[in-house]
Image 1: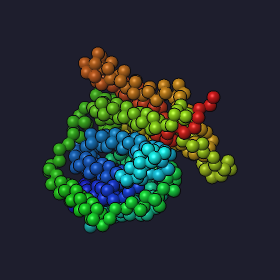
Image 2 (image 1 turned 90 degrees about the horizontal axis):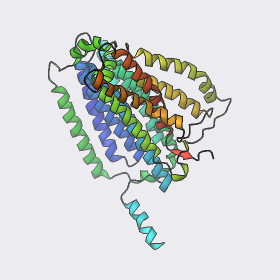
Image 3 (image 1 turned 90 degrees about the vertical axis):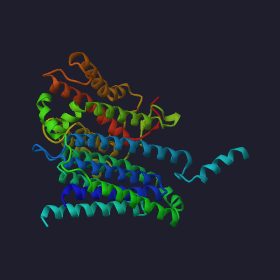
Image 4 (image 1 turned 120 degrees about the vertical axis):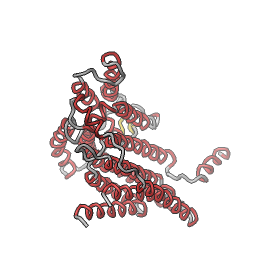
Length: 113
Length: 315
């Protein structure tokens, strides 16, 4: 087994681990972390494919490598926006729950007041 | 088994173990620390995959900046952890999630094993046209010549993310300072590092930026190092974030994409296509775009970590 196949399989497993965490963990920050695990798995899969494109003395195909750099920067900015949303939710409500019954309670309160 | 394969297998097992730890550990703060380690391990894998440019980006942004951002958020959200832990789903949901995760991973694994041989590659095409750009690093040539549309849109996406973060500010803090005002012991180790490291970090950052034309490196990696140095000074309480209403700040934030767009459209007149460079002028134009993008990227990346404006602007 060569390095690109090994890391390609590793990437597939990372996507699986991240997907499980994304669904199961109720905390928004942990969901963001899990989503980043999936993202890194996708990047790694792409990188393994780039490595297979090694030719003319280059270690890998430079086109996917350049797109990976773009992808990592965009993933960071999306993460920053998601974290800012969670922190704003915390500032507004004092909790970060995503449970569907919690907002319903909050909506039921104003008519009584 | 060769030594290289042994290293690769150990790296794979280590990364998978850290990923499992990030998902399974109870304490969010511990999970974030695990994520920083995960980013650095992935950077090692990028080196093993012969992608040093990606390795630098992953270590600087994937591990470093994302880690700093998440550590700050985990610290602020610590109080909410006990409450949300009660919402952990039951056995049925967890089993279904595990089945779905294994299915997706298995499908991807089958895809990896069924990849075509010989693999399609654009490396010969990139190398053949490298001389027309005047840069020596094929990845930089792809980023700023062959696929410069991606890089232009990326610079705009990063800016849009910052606008999104800013627009979450409460009305009273609009135009104010992003993030909390940091205070640290003026004689402590953090303040010492914030005085000692930036001169070194700035030189390393500028070097990585400049060398990117010919060797692994580039503006994203260099800008991240410069942003990290600025954030270090801010976290040590030696400086404050600028209020987002400052004109100089807004000018520097848009100058990179504006120069990129201007040179891109000038190409439609001088070279016959948008984002094309006239023959012989590719290298100076690429350098001009990179220099214009540099302050934009440094400020945007640092301010994305600093977060939403929280404090009133000075009256």
